[in-house]
Length: 441
Image (cartoon, rainbow, N blue to C red; front, side):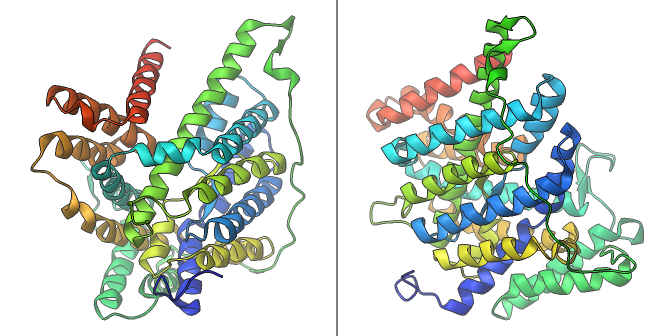
């Protein structure tokens, strides 16, 4: 069913890969309830919605797309939901969930029509490789920041902390990275997963892995916030229908739409490049099924009571552990379902234990940079901009945005207009319009 032999993998390897991906992204189970809870949503209900929506979307990814990609409520998108939409713009969390639902429905339609797949195919080959490399640096930076290895209070713009007991998390992450490197060089199967487990255990005496008193690993899940939507709030203000209210909702809707679209596209391109999950034409295998899974996840997530569900770059850690099929995704989904009842156990894994996996994946994804044609400046410069922008803007979607715009500019100046696909022209125009809109907003 999953073409294991064809893709050169085994059941055991896929399960290890699925577990690795889950452990690398398990932080969302702790972060999302805390963040959305600031809007007035019940944190326990959000935890249940987070785990369930991640499990359902990832199961769809595994069975429909047969790709080792996991999904969950996206970081960045949940911050926009909380701090911009609810706190900044004064919208209720019910209205924010309504925007997430409508975005998911529209994406589902576009996915079935093949429009999102066409966008992926329109991205030039060198940019696709650059997206993979950029994501590698991006998630490496996430790992470094989560562990406290890099910080902005070191006397420079950003620098490395000293590895001493006052920075126990950073020290533990470095120890975990050394363990992971040794295991990988020695070709130990499941090196990344073993590294996460070992680092978690080592963190106990260091005080980084915190085991509560009277620790009980089992707990019953809370009831999710089912169908808590506010459709009237789309256009109805205190004085009835108001264009300003509708305009504000459209801004919210479009922001959710574009961020989710290009975060997902970037993740799929990165994982496909790393795991060689491409067809003979260089396109992502089963891209339509993957995009449908992403859309279904967002719709289900909104119905359960959580922010936009998207594909996770941490899936790269599972691919690095050998994941090549949807069976890895199904293993990840199973862990999310189990986490509903064992949340205290899974939440023991500190960020310092998953950081080495993310940092090491940066190396694995960097290897494809040699395939980029840097000799041709009209190809090399857009690729460089894409790679540079992702970690420094802390955004996959912005990396794609600046890369596509630079690609069009370079091809125009280099008199290679024929190299620019029609959809790429359209994307560049949309991206430029978005930059102008943000500048004048």
